[in-house]
Length: 203
Image (cartoon, rainbow, N blue to C red; front, side, top):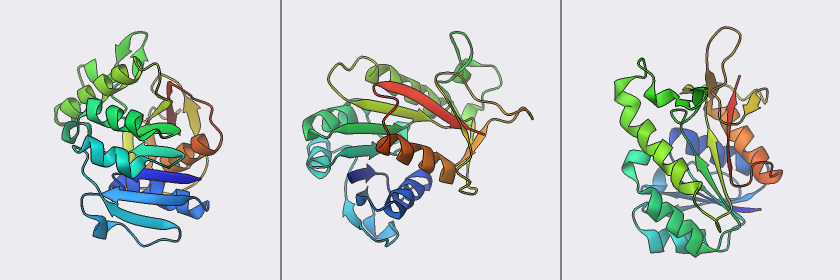
């Protein structure tokens, strides 16, 4: 498939780009500084600005899927959604956050007392992004939330999927590696199972 990814030089974006390339997809890797994108087979690096709605739409046009892997506080969800709609892309997938996941019925992680203050703005904006997507009637979107800890690690290919609830292991830890998150996202692109839905991945 032809897949565009914005934020391709980031920690999650670079792993997603590598995973898609590994599977033989044709990838347009977009970043503010395209020289930071690793050279990989079937990957074309391009310069793009998340605040340039028309420019993004043009970069995404002609692809089977577009992925947004950018910080919520450094972008405008409405512009990104607008670009996805204007591009005519088949699917729009968002690297989400864990803050909007529920820890109890109707209780989002970001609203709990022990949620780290330094991540609150980003998590709150991510939750708003998800709420905006849920209002979309025409866009074919999917929002994938990582677990609470989203860290560098290994590609094991072994993880669990969930929907709107935070996944926690038997040890009480909620985490996923960037590498396995990329596997879950690539699987979703190849075998769609969460159309116009949010899902989550964790160990």
